[in-house]
Structures are given as C-alpha cells and as structure tokens.
Image 1 (spheres, helix red, strand yellow):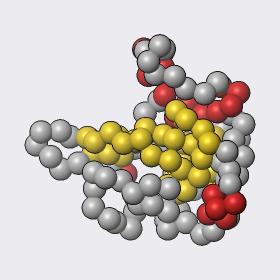
Image 2: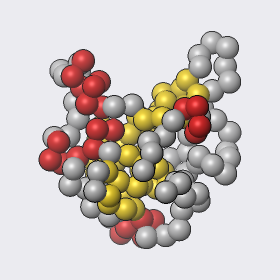
Image 3: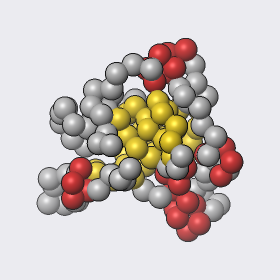
Length: 130
C-alpha cells in the first residue's frame, strides 16, 4: 500500500523515528514494540504536513489522532479523528477519512475505549486506495 504523497494527496506523514534521532531529549516517542503492537480501536497520534495555498508557508504541520481500524503486515489503516486546521472541510481528507501509517509515524499512543472501537468498526468517510 502506498504512503501518502504530497503531490498526489496534498499531505504526507513525518517519520517520527528520524525526528526522535535528531532530538532524542525533546522529541520522545513510544518504544518500537509499543508502536508495532497497536490493536483495533487504539489511538495513534501522527504528524501531518499538509500543503496549503499560502505565500508565506507552503505546508502546515499538524499533530492529529487516528483510530486504528485495520492491522496490516507492515503498518495500519486508521480513521482520522481530528479536523485539519489548515484546510477547509472537504470530502477527501477530513475527520473520518482512512489514513495509512506505519510504526515509524507514531508519536503518541492511547488505548482503545468503547467509542473508538465503535468508530474503528464503522464505515470511513473516504477509503484509502488499495
């Protein structure tokens, strides 16, 4: 499955492992084991770079939660659980959209609850191309 590409999707995910290596004392991430063992309904916080139409800045960086809805052999599919601040509401990338991600993208984890598990089992706003 392809990762998000700014030229195709208008956004992509930062690699948290690279950021952690650059600043290990100030940018902490969960252990590799924790990031590789999420379950359906768990929350993962990811760092999104969203391309915007702004002469001052070409991208907006947002930390947003996704809810794990599918476990893949090399990562996850999640349901976006935040509304992006940098862009207007749309049908392609908004709260409820499927997001592919891997352990390398995760900066924070929260365990599932009843509500997140229900969201994980519901139909997404948009499906990621498979």
